[in-house]
Image 1 (cartoon, helix red, strand yellow):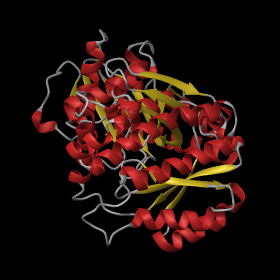
Image 2: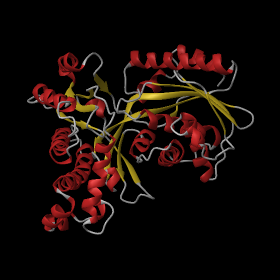
Image 3: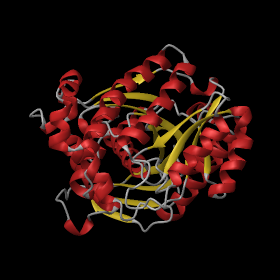
Length: 428
């Protein structure tokens, strides 16, 4: 569709029903999303010219639902795509030049035929574009030239994986423009992970990209690293009467690298007592049978973190089963157990070197005070130590909950989220 036709279509209400379904929202928000996309088309025209044949794509951020620090041990994760997304307006061009202008950032310029890792590009979005081209080439697909404007509502540092949304978005653009959509969603996610690992220089797992690419609730199994398994878990979150809220404690992650690294390292030390690399390769019964030996060899914190892994890995299945059965109350009870396990056994709620800074602990205590007796649930979200808490809040209680949270953590610290049914998609 020509850019001017796309703008008219969006501003006239075209596609609002599709947008309402995609973003799990009402008519007013669907209209606002249409206007947002029309503005992105205008930004594309200002940057790359009018009259081009364009396509519009979208990819969501993600929330970790269950499986706190299980993925790096070959475990399972339950994740969900959310309504906050990154969007792109893109058009094919002659040659092999790729130009991507993301709102608020300088334009990236990459040659799709130059797939060599550039050390000077490490940590940049240009490295991700080059890595994505390389990933498609490894699957025998050739990416050509295109230009695109992107805009993201998945804010960096929000704990909702803005980087994975960007990778899946541009991977979906390349898949749509040059591969006819032949690469399946999990394949796009794997290409995004490859780009982040090998070109960007960050050794991330696959959970974030997979959740963004698949959409809805995703059950991910990493027991076979070369062939991870993924399946969607059917559940209409919009009908459960609760809001999924993210509480941003606004704590700093600076200086916490050693605390994060200690979790997989100590879990690995516990697994090594059995001659294994990962805890997913260790039998739980054998672990407990040899507990004194593991304590002596790996230390008590490693033991407690391993205990968390075994229970949390099992709980992922249980939470997915509860959603499949439509038993949301059972699901919420498991969320609470997950939160207690992370605090008591995994111990990733506050860094031991900063006992005076316990924003997540304070947020969890507030959630307990506000939601106990109202059917809600709460847990640490993501890596921990600083960052965010996840809370399931009854819809009618949200105004009071939000007000009390923002009195402590400031305006905008309580973010209500929807669960998006689709992952990386072509909108128009």
